[in-house]
Image 1 (cartoon, rainbow, N blue to C red):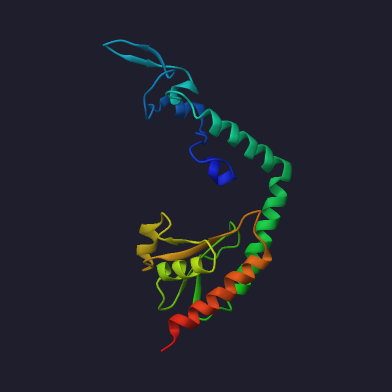
Image 2 (cartoon, one colour):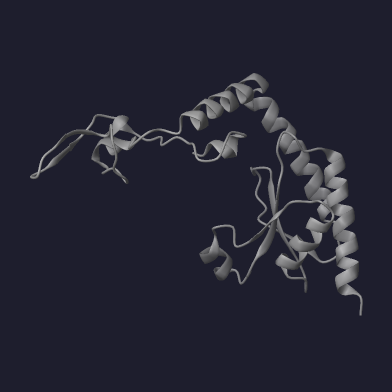
Amino acid sequence: FSAHKMYGPTGAGVLYGKEKWLNQMPPYQGGGSMIQEVTFEKTTYADLPYKFEAGTQNIAGVVGFGAAVDYLNQITLAKITAHEQRLLKIATTELQTVPDLKIIGNTREKAAVISFVITDIHPHDIGTALDTYGIAVRVGHHCAMPLMTRFNVPAAVRVSFAIYNTIAEIQILVAALFKITALFKTP
Protein backbone atom coordinates (compact mmCIF):
# COMPACT_ATOMS: atom_id res chain seq x y z
CA PHE A 1 0.00 0.00 0.00
CA SER A 2 1.09 3.53 -0.75
CA ALA A 3 2.08 6.10 1.84
CA HIS A 4 0.34 8.90 -0.05
CA LYS A 5 -3.01 7.12 0.42
CA MET A 6 -2.46 7.55 4.16
CA TYR A 7 -1.50 11.27 4.10
CA GLY A 8 2.20 10.43 3.80
CA PRO A 9 4.78 11.27 1.15
CA THR A 10 4.79 9.89 -2.38
CA GLY A 11 7.37 7.31 -3.36
CA ALA A 12 7.06 5.20 -0.21
CA GLY A 13 4.88 2.26 0.65
CA VAL A 14 4.67 -1.24 2.00
CA LEU A 15 4.62 -4.63 0.33
CA TYR A 16 2.51 -6.77 2.62
CA GLY A 17 1.92 -10.43 2.02
CA LYS A 18 2.04 -13.91 3.42
CA GLU A 19 5.58 -15.09 4.05
CA LYS A 20 4.97 -18.30 2.08
CA TRP A 21 4.12 -16.35 -1.08
CA LEU A 22 6.74 -13.64 -0.62
CA ASN A 23 9.42 -16.34 -0.36
CA GLN A 24 8.24 -17.83 -3.66
CA MET A 25 8.07 -14.50 -5.51
CA PRO A 26 11.11 -13.24 -7.38
CA PRO A 27 12.23 -9.66 -6.68
CA TYR A 28 10.83 -7.16 -9.17
CA GLN A 29 14.01 -5.07 -9.27
CA GLY A 30 17.67 -5.52 -8.46
CA GLY A 31 20.15 -3.57 -6.40
CA GLY A 32 22.43 -3.62 -3.41
CA SER A 33 21.47 -5.26 -0.10
CA MET A 34 18.92 -7.62 -1.64
CA ILE A 35 21.25 -10.47 -2.47
CA GLN A 36 22.97 -13.05 -0.35
CA GLU A 37 25.38 -14.27 -3.02
CA VAL A 38 26.01 -13.63 -6.71
CA THR A 39 28.15 -15.78 -8.98
CA PHE A 40 28.22 -16.27 -12.73
CA GLU A 41 26.16 -19.41 -12.23
CA LYS A 42 23.43 -18.22 -9.88
CA THR A 43 22.07 -15.54 -7.60
CA THR A 44 20.81 -16.23 -4.11
CA TYR A 45 18.53 -13.56 -2.68
CA ALA A 46 18.61 -12.32 0.90
CA ASP A 47 15.94 -13.38 3.37
CA LEU A 48 12.73 -11.38 3.71
CA PRO A 49 12.22 -8.47 3.79
CA TYR A 50 15.63 -7.58 2.30
CA LYS A 51 14.94 -9.59 -0.85
CA PHE A 52 12.56 -6.80 -1.97
CA GLU A 53 14.66 -3.85 -0.78
CA ALA A 54 16.97 -3.16 -3.70
CA GLY A 55 19.38 -0.26 -3.37
CA THR A 56 19.27 2.67 -1.00
CA GLN A 57 15.85 3.04 0.51
CA ASN A 58 13.76 6.21 0.43
CA ILE A 59 14.74 7.02 4.01
CA ALA A 60 13.03 10.41 4.20
CA GLY A 61 9.88 8.94 2.63
CA VAL A 62 9.80 6.09 5.13
CA VAL A 63 10.25 8.49 8.07
CA GLY A 64 7.43 10.63 6.69
CA PHE A 65 5.29 7.52 6.22
CA GLY A 66 5.91 6.59 9.85
CA ALA A 67 4.74 10.04 10.93
CA ALA A 68 1.59 9.64 8.83
CA VAL A 69 0.86 6.26 10.44
CA ASP A 70 1.36 7.81 13.90
CA TYR A 71 -1.02 10.63 12.95
CA LEU A 72 -3.72 8.22 11.78
CA ASN A 73 -3.32 6.08 14.88
CA GLN A 74 -3.68 9.19 17.06
CA ILE A 75 -7.00 10.07 15.43
CA THR A 76 -8.09 6.38 15.29
CA LEU A 77 -9.50 4.57 12.32
CA ALA A 78 -12.91 4.40 13.99
CA LYS A 79 -13.19 8.21 14.13
CA ILE A 80 -11.88 8.60 10.59
CA THR A 81 -14.36 6.03 9.27
CA ALA A 82 -17.28 7.63 11.15
CA HIS A 83 -16.44 11.08 9.73
CA GLU A 84 -16.00 9.79 6.18
CA GLN A 85 -19.23 7.76 6.32
CA ARG A 86 -21.14 10.80 7.58
CA LEU A 87 -19.81 12.84 4.65
CA LEU A 88 -20.63 10.00 2.24
CA LYS A 89 -24.23 9.84 3.44
CA ILE A 90 -24.73 13.61 3.21
CA ALA A 91 -23.03 13.87 -0.18
CA THR A 92 -25.04 10.98 -1.61
CA THR A 93 -28.29 12.66 -0.59
CA GLU A 94 -27.21 16.10 -1.82
CA LEU A 95 -25.81 14.90 -5.15
CA GLN A 96 -29.10 13.19 -5.96
CA THR A 97 -30.69 16.66 -6.14
CA VAL A 98 -28.50 17.67 -9.11
CA PRO A 99 -30.45 17.39 -12.38
CA ASP A 100 -29.55 14.39 -14.54
CA LEU A 101 -26.81 13.21 -12.14
CA LYS A 102 -26.53 9.44 -11.80
CA ILE A 103 -24.42 7.91 -9.07
CA ILE A 104 -22.51 4.85 -10.24
CA GLY A 105 -22.12 2.09 -7.69
CA ASN A 106 -24.50 1.79 -4.81
CA THR A 107 -23.80 -0.77 -2.15
CA ARG A 108 -24.61 -1.05 1.52
CA GLU A 109 -20.99 -0.99 2.67
CA LYS A 110 -19.10 1.62 0.71
CA ALA A 111 -15.90 3.59 1.07
CA ALA A 112 -16.23 7.37 1.12
CA VAL A 113 -16.05 7.65 -2.66
CA ILE A 114 -18.80 8.59 -5.09
CA SER A 115 -18.55 8.15 -8.84
CA PHE A 116 -21.13 9.82 -11.03
CA VAL A 117 -22.08 10.96 -14.50
CA ILE A 118 -24.38 13.74 -15.65
CA THR A 119 -26.42 13.04 -18.77
CA ASP A 120 -25.05 14.78 -21.90
CA ILE A 121 -22.03 16.33 -20.12
CA HIS A 122 -18.71 14.56 -20.53
CA PRO A 123 -17.01 13.82 -17.19
CA HIS A 124 -13.82 15.56 -18.35
CA ASP A 125 -15.83 18.73 -18.94
CA ILE A 126 -17.34 18.43 -15.47
CA GLY A 127 -13.89 17.96 -13.94
CA THR A 128 -12.49 20.97 -15.79
CA ALA A 129 -15.47 23.11 -14.80
CA LEU A 130 -15.24 22.02 -11.14
CA ASP A 131 -11.56 22.99 -11.19
CA THR A 132 -12.58 26.57 -11.94
CA TYR A 133 -14.46 26.51 -8.62
CA GLY A 134 -11.39 25.16 -6.82
CA ILE A 135 -12.88 21.68 -6.50
CA ALA A 136 -10.55 18.75 -7.13
CA VAL A 137 -12.08 15.53 -8.45
CA ARG A 138 -10.79 12.62 -10.50
CA VAL A 139 -12.23 11.87 -13.94
CA GLY A 140 -11.75 8.95 -16.27
CA HIS A 141 -12.12 5.19 -16.00
CA HIS A 142 -10.54 4.96 -12.52
CA CYS A 143 -8.55 1.79 -13.29
CA ALA A 144 -11.82 -0.02 -14.00
CA MET A 145 -11.95 0.20 -17.78
CA PRO A 146 -13.20 -3.36 -18.39
CA LEU A 147 -16.07 -2.86 -15.93
CA MET A 148 -16.95 0.56 -17.32
CA THR A 149 -16.83 -0.82 -20.87
CA ARG A 150 -19.16 -3.64 -19.80
CA PHE A 151 -21.69 -1.07 -18.54
CA ASN A 152 -21.08 1.37 -21.43
CA VAL A 153 -19.72 4.13 -19.21
CA PRO A 154 -16.86 5.84 -21.07
CA ALA A 155 -15.76 7.87 -18.05
CA ALA A 156 -17.02 9.08 -14.69
CA VAL A 157 -16.37 11.81 -12.15
CA ARG A 158 -15.13 10.60 -8.78
CA VAL A 159 -15.24 12.58 -5.57
CA SER A 160 -13.44 11.16 -2.54
CA PHE A 161 -13.88 12.22 1.07
CA ALA A 162 -11.26 12.21 3.79
CA ILE A 163 -10.72 13.38 7.34
CA TYR A 164 -10.03 16.94 6.23
CA ASN A 165 -13.25 17.39 4.24
CA THR A 166 -16.30 19.23 5.56
CA ILE A 167 -20.04 19.42 4.99
CA ALA A 168 -19.52 22.96 3.70
CA GLU A 169 -17.32 21.56 0.93
CA ILE A 170 -20.08 19.17 -0.09
CA GLN A 171 -22.45 22.13 -0.33
CA ILE A 172 -19.91 23.99 -2.49
CA LEU A 173 -19.58 20.93 -4.76
CA VAL A 174 -23.34 20.57 -5.19
CA ALA A 175 -23.84 24.30 -5.84
CA ALA A 176 -21.08 24.19 -8.47
CA LEU A 177 -22.68 21.15 -10.14
CA PHE A 178 -26.02 22.99 -10.34
CA LYS A 179 -24.26 25.90 -12.08
CA ILE A 180 -22.32 23.61 -14.41
CA THR A 181 -25.43 21.63 -15.31
CA ALA A 182 -27.34 24.83 -16.06
CA LEU A 183 -24.46 26.16 -18.18
CA PHE A 184 -24.05 23.00 -20.25
CA LYS A 185 -27.78 22.41 -20.64
CA THR A 186 -28.57 25.96 -21.84
CA PRO A 187 -29.91 25.80 -25.42
